Length: 350
Image (tube, rainbow, N blue to C red; front, side, top):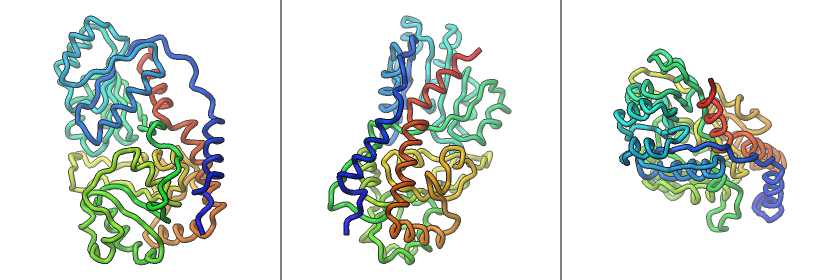
């Protein structure tokens, strides 16, 4: 029997939740120059979503790349704020020259704490520093940054939202993301307990799984899906699992300071924005964003994960109620617009 969340009635419930969210209000009478990451995919959708959101929020937005003559453009255009995303490709000399023009500068770090070896050299150049990881706030303050704030990424509703997925991809539970070693450990233990369920795993390096051959017909290895396809996968499954990356995983990790991670990853908001039940590993700051057991479900071990997947697949109304509450909370509090309003408020604070 098909689950009710896959029918038109479920889509109608999701739309009603979204329409109940108040509009963001009038545009701010300011000019923001937004410096894209310049890193290409998978950062391009992030660049595009933030640029589009700013375009709806402020009177004027100028979008530039990190290799453009941003100093020259800023000298002519005189924006009220230059906001750099990630900033790893943006020349430090340009940042210094922009500040010498008396123009406010802010940076929003997207990958903390995993690249703090690099960001530690960038952060002190900016007037305002925003990081998605709470534990990085004192780290940057100790480097001499006077104005540091924890602002999570949130979600762009233009990409992540409830939608009617194709029938052929629908299933019980999915996980989308790279096979960092802590994730491999969880699924190595949990998958035998979910063998009877229709599950899907997609991402890089999943052939690391010790018993990969046993599950390979349910795992798509080596492909990074774009946001719209990722969103469709979340919508196509009754439950989406989220497991945070370990702060000390050696795979593409530049965190010699060994800063632990407490804040939720962007996937936390993206799954919830799709109106899908999320089961996520316990993380210190989750409860600041969603109420566990009411808007999100947490797990403490592979066995706990499997037990909760099975429970909520058998209790559809309870699963749907949690998912709808998470959708409402996300669209009200955790969109790019919410985050950017916060960044603008703090950037222009005395």
